[in-house]
Length: 177
Image 1 (cartoon, one colour):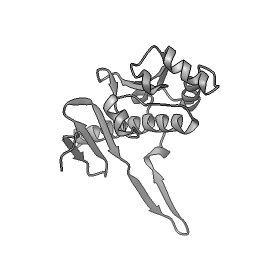
Image 2 (cartoon, helix red, strand yellow; image 1 turned 30 degrees about the vertical axis):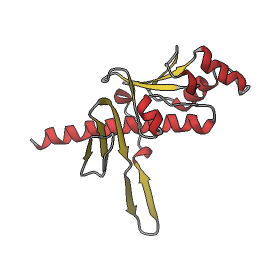
Image 3 (cartoon, rainbow, N blue to C red; image 1 turned 90 degrees about the vertical axis):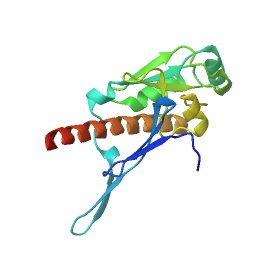
């Protein structure tokens, strides 16, 4: 089976990371679930139930395209030119993830677009939750509706959690030595 993903790392925690060796700014993760049973109730929790670490979250930046093509697409939809920016910003809440109204992101035919940056990587990053075309382009395409903005924000939150888990595993490894 040939794939554009060249390396998959599976962790004992159940997390899986996929790295494209041609593009070190790309990663995907398979979600994990933790099941716990109490006396009369079964409860399923996900890693999404935990708060985002502010130090890790502050390394991510959501770039919302505000260029002519993206603004035109929003006008065609009869929404404010800042609708996507406002939608992403409203999902941010008290998170330390940065949200910026940016210039052209370079995917005008797929407008309106959103890109994600991380301070440890050069350029935009690809995240789990992107379509294959978005993953290759490293930009979310046609972010028009609330569901699209939810998908972007869920992907960002997941990426923050992946980085939090990596930090936690590194600390455990250091403590074991």
